[in-house]
Every structure is written in structure tokens, then in C-alpha cells.
Length: 427
Image 1 (tube, rainbow, N blue to C red):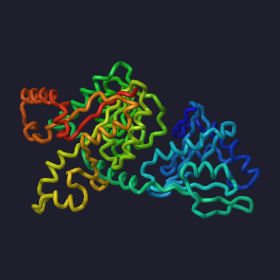
Image 2: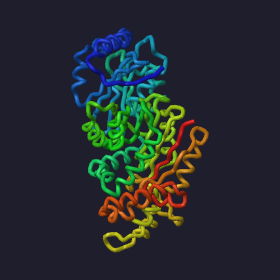
Image 3: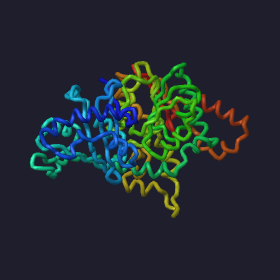
Image 4: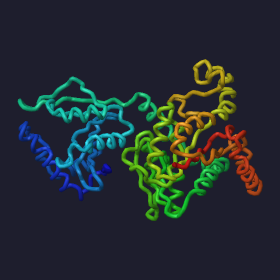
């Protein structure tokens, strides 16, 4: 059974109200609570649809409405799961658990989730505990028959810190402009050249971490069906602004490490051209790659971009700061560079920087599920000589691109590239 959530529309209202009445009426017979949702009509749902702080969704099971789930934003980062109901004929099928997991993935800024339910409803308790919620010990008495237990779920602190750092950075940094510069065109052109090697008519593409849409929209403009997932609301808004009626683009706000709203084995090509820049633990990286593989069809192509460490060692660590001190000493003292000149990042440093051996280790984890086709330096030396490239005449620039194309997969040079692209085929 494939479970998905869609925002409530007018066409869903009557069915949702019927299911809500059917699901909650037995609880009214048991608790006699005056505010029971069994007696809430379409007007309540319409008010929620119009409110910036309510998020009502229809739960679909194999494209048929099976229930509803509503989230209320209490304050920044704190959300209340205010209502969840499933058609009684479909209960005990895992629909509620799946709906909670999918719903939570729609709110990557969440620090804390809250919900309540009748203290004597053991099936509800088991469902919520399974989803990671725990008892706060607080209760709320509604009447002599009904007392609600309050449960909560905290988001991992580093995930919240990462979200805040990325939101602040990408709300002010022009990532698309970087790729439009002459030296930035080298990375963009190389990435697209390798993408095009594996495109055929009808290719269905998923880009995870689509940013403002530089790649997704270009591919959609070529006629491909593109699904774009982006974590940062600012970027996603910019992407959506640029979608034209002729483009087939579906967009979602979501996190690369949790995409339960997307179905297995669906896409011919899955691109992660940014998420690996901002995943700081091996566990997060493996989780994101597992999700990408899950979503790709057998034989599908994965394109995984990394930021490489040694260019930063050369062009940042061994350069002077504004006070004339060489940064390397402070970075070593703070544990961000070790004696082997490996770099370590936290959300405060923003970018996770790896060496080729790290990418090899991640691939080895999935060697039974995928084969590696290429490991490409997408910009190679472009940022080292960016001033020259940016003023170079067209004929000379074409020659440079020919040189770049010759060496961008050369094993003894690729680690010097600022950005790389690891290309896999799912077995």
C-alpha cells in the first residue's frame, strides 16, 4: 500500500468530513466530549486551509482518500499534530505511522512536535511511541470521562542547527550566480555534460537539494519530467517562481535524509548536487545515499556532488586572515584541521569537505547495490585561475574547456577539484 499526503483541497472536503465523523463517533460515544471532531464540518477545514498556521493534509492509500492529518504551528520550530484519523476499515494497516513520518518530513525547521490523545487509548500510545514520541507526564482533563496525555518529540539538536545555518546562508548567497560566472560555467557545463550522457526520451528525474532550480529547471526546459526537493524555503520559493507552464516540474520542501513522501523505484535519474555539502556525519551521508538509491529504478543513474578538502587547505587554511595571521594555526588549535590535514566541519563551518578516499568509502558501503561509472572533477582548476578565465577570450576559453574535459576524470588530479561528481548506476 503506497501512502502519500496531499494538501487538502475543496474536492477533498466532503470525503474527509465523512471519514472524520466515522472515525471519531465511537470516541464521542465513549467520552461524550463536546468538542469531538465527529461533529466538525467542512467550514473548519476551510478555515484551516486559509490559515497560515494550519496545515491540513489528506492521507491517500494507493490514491484513495484514507484519512486526514492536520498540523498546527504553535511558534517558530514548534508544531502540534492536532488531528489524525484513518478510515476504520483501514486501521491497523500502518497508515497512521506512515502518515506521521511523511508529515514530519514536510517541516524540516521543526525543533519539537507535540500531540495529545486519551490516556486510556493504548493503540494510540503504541503508534506514537513507535514514531518516536514520549510522555511528558502532563495531562489535560476534558471532562469526567476524558483526560488527554501530552506526548512530545524533539528534533536532533544538530539537525536544527544545520537547518538554521543553511537557511541563513542561502537566504543571502547567490548560488545560481556562482554557476553563471565564467569560471562557474565550467562546473555547470561539466555536470550537465555528464547528466546528458544518461538521458533518454522520457527520463524521469529527481533532484534532491535543487536549490533555486539551476539544474532542475534547465532539464525541465528540455522536456524532461522533473521532481525537485529543496530544504530551504527561500530557495524553493525562487525555484517555483521560475517554473513556466510548459515545464513538468513537481516541487516539495524536504530533507535529503528523510523523503518518505516519495515512492520507491520511481526515478530514472536521481541527482544530489548539494545535500552532501552539508551532511556532517557518516550516518547522515549513508542515510541520504540510501534514500537516493531507494528512489531510483533498477538501472537508474545517481549523480552525487561533493566539496573537496584539499583546495580549501591550499586556498583558505594557508592564507592570512584580516589580521595577517595564517589561518592554519587557529584551525588546528580548534580541531578543525588535524595533523594529516584532514578537515572537520560542523554547521558553523557550513560545508563538509572530503577527500576522494572518503567518497570511495561511502561508495564501498553500497557496492552491492550500485556500480560506479565515473568520478569527475567538475571544476578542476577553474577556481584557481578564475580571474584569468573570467577575462579570457572565447577562443582561448574553448581551448581551456577542451583541456578540462581531457583531465577531469584523471585519478591523480581529481582531488584538486573544488567540486566533484560521483556517478553510480543502481543494480
